Length: 336
Length: 276
Image (cartoon, rainbow over the protein chains, first blue to last red):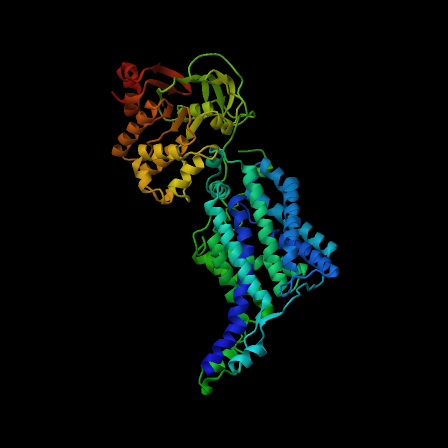
């Protein structure tokens, strides 16, 4: 019974939150890795692209809620996602047209584009704060739990409860669908293959008649959609705050680099590695360990390796370790 | 190097923020999508070409003329640094021509971008980075046919008949193949557009002598289907043996021109550069 309780506590406090968080990071990291593979620079504006996309969704969700539109047990935000994607797409395409395109025409070195993306990041950052404000906003509605801790305890008679929130289930299901669609697109469609070809060898792609501007356009479309979906899932799971999204940049980059930049499979693996490490290292293990250990060995402290304030340190440390021992990432990076 | 400040990365080598892999280096002298109609003459000719890399670079080619007839094999040979590859790139529009022009089937294509030349029936196989290494052999061929709207299955079948090994390895990543097989993929990819002229930049560089003979045989077969071949070769003797026309370049100018057999028999060519 103790073991079972231990597993339930572990699932409730570590596994389920980490899987949901990992899915959100994976979607974010996929966007970063696509830009890296095709436009060949690290897009520092990605966190704020997520913030802008999510902001559109939040505003439209509020509008829908005011009009009395709801999606039954599901969050209304899911209905607003397509509009948010449209907004984010318009935003990145305008940015590309008026900012990045100039540098492409100059054949600017990627590191210049990295700096440019930082400028874009600050602009998005400010725009989000001007339009929606710098505070914490909640926009999740609908049914809160699939299984609440109390129901689970009543059902099983265990001491520990297992709560599964609707947003966590939605996050994982959406992530699976989006990732499957992305992989199908990259591997099976003509446009997707042309994107991989462009990423692999730009000159040869040009000689094969692939239009670089079209590849770039499609890439931005996909990246804007991924960023919006990732941002909304994160916002539903926690809450929407412009600064938090800016901070998400670090775990997302860590995920993309750990997995191998430019490799979509790696981005997903990296997302889960970072999420599990972050949750695992900042979780107070006392409760779970008590179930697994004989009473004599019961730990005195909380067995929390780092306090949650330091969760970004975890991403950093993993990043440094991977760059030291396996610079190309867990999966072989640098090609789509 | 370049005086464009945007192209100065101050020695950045950090691959965790910038992707060094597969960046475009293709320079194009052309700007226009369509050729100017011209006169009759050889099928493809680069006439009196003078030029070098970049707007201000020194001239590498001096009044150099290269031409090839329908279904013929023309070979450019010459010592190291003679401008062989440069002459080929000039014909393909990757070089600023200061004088001279390029005619394809009588039409003036001097102002065309390399991409536009591909659409007008020229296929080019660069010496290096000539395949998509991360993609399968079949995907490489598909990408070769990217500009084609029609069904290209029969062309792919022809390529597989020409290079049977590619059919066997069709699902394998092209980057995992041997040097000779990679060259076959590269030539196959260029053939997928159904070009009228195929330009090969040192197709046998870095492959073993047996594979080299095999590749030359395949190239002859391609020429027999009516495709003109323009080829730069290091292995001058073997290349001239299969050539209908040979050009010996020395310091960017035509030194000797003739049929392959003539050049092989030419005492001066033999002495100065075929080694006796």
